[in-house]
Image (tube, rainbow, N blue to C red; front, side):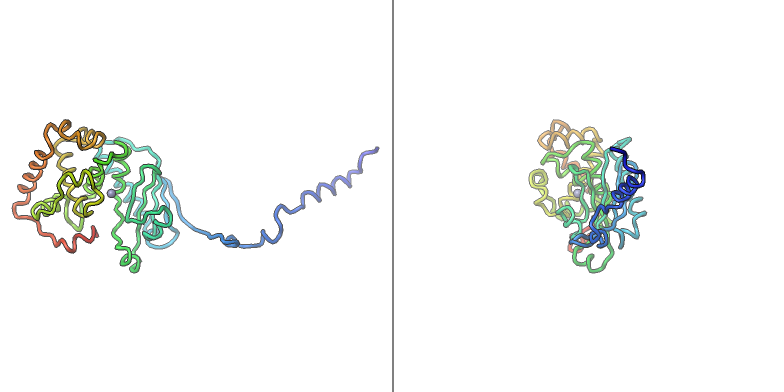
Length: 282
Ligand SMILES: [Zn+2]
């Protein structure tokens, strides 16, 4: 049999090349067809951090200053914990509301740091309706990035060290409604509002948040300033039952020292309108 004429071969190739890959009706429809939603977001990577922002609204408009605030807080927290480097990849996400955060990760709070998924999240908005409805506070950047760094340094804390994790993160910010951790600690002590240490150690998240976080922060500050990072890290990892072995005295003795230190620092007392204060660090 003789070979096919060249013209016939060229026509065959042309016919195959022109066969459409998709049916014409699917090509013509919009991305939202069949129930799809287009979600726009912005992302930026700096070192080991990948930031995600919504494509509109307050966080979008302030994305550069919010990223800068995160990077500054991370550097400050690293220095506080004497860490020369921090290379663990983390994703830092800003949400326009607690409801949006909840929809994405099933928890809707002002800020969170997840050691297991390597994610940190914040709500940042100035929308008056959302601010009112969700009791919005400024994104707790120093607090959550301290959780991130401390947990990477010492590991996820055992149950009896949860008060240290929250106390350290609260101390990292060291400002609630213009008051330092020590000022708040003095107020709580003077008004006999503090929890017994057993409550902080065994049922931290069942305690009143504003009291438990600031009481713990005051203890953390004292332990760090007087006994340093190494003992603090050991207590974090070994848990509260190891306190006396690590610090060389039972906790009540240390607590008495902390009380004496605060009483001496504020002889005239500290005035706080607690009913307003307890609504959150605005
Ligand atoms: Zn926290």
